[in-house]
Amino acid sequence: MNKIGILGVGSYLPEKKVTNFDLAKILDTSDEWIRARTGIKERRFASPDQAASDLAANAAERAIKDAGISQEDIDLIIVGTNSPDTLYPATACLVQDKIGAKNAAAFDLQAGCTGWVYASIVGAQFIKTGMYKHVLVIGVEAITKMVDEKDRDTYVLFGDGAGATIIEDTEQEDTGIIGNKSATYATDEAYYLAFEASYNQELQRETRYIKMNGRMIYNFALTYVPQAMKDCLDESGIDIKDLKKIFIHQANEKMDQAICERFYKLYDLEMPENVMPMSIAELGNSSVATLPTLLDLVKRKQIENQEINKGDIVLFASVGAGMNINALTYKI
Image (cartoon, rainbow, N blue to C red; front, top):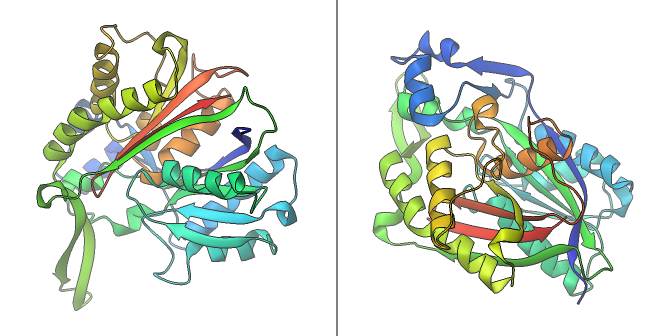
């Protein structure tokens, strides 16, 4: 069977930059404290009048242009997000209207920070069955609207953004998605990232904000993600020495570094230099949006000393609420 390949990539980042120094004015924190623990220097915040669908539509239009197709060529839109405009209708439906993709079916997929990889896997199945030809896969977050600005542990982490890819049957056997691995650990102890309700005196109503236990998530990720990456690579029949880049969910610089180092140690190897592109310093953790935006930045050579070329084999990996983990191998 022919492989499912990425025809076009696009991303959109809100204009507003929020630095660690900005946050230090409203929180008991500092630039040094944040950078030492997360690697983050700044992040993007959506404006009050920007919703997830607005960010997603901008990224989608850029991906469509990059693919050289029209909006009417899109058969299906899958939006991975944890910060939808509304519970329903789906954000994907709003994107369909905003970009004029009148022939596309549309739905959302919610799987924590692993949403874009999951959405790519799901979209690939529709193409493999012959049901659709062009699938628009979007990872988007306006997640800063869901974080308590009084909670230092979470407010300093998150940013907003959107990344989009157009996937299709490549009609070739030597390019595209090679394999994937997904797993869920939904035990009571696994709910380390969730919403917590609190009563807002000012608004006189209950509000819900993201709450997380960073240490438990860190330990979980280091325990399970490297093995999932190895399983994916092995089941894809790829020699690790042929792997050119690892695109890992931008959650925490130290955590991502440790995950990749453990991954290579499973093969008794040292992690090569420049194998792991990073955008967290400038963009923070934009949850589902981190991987597709990072892919677009690398493709456009916007990250120093990082580029991908035709024929390169890359590995995508992510971890998110659930707890969910997944990995995907891809040949450019």
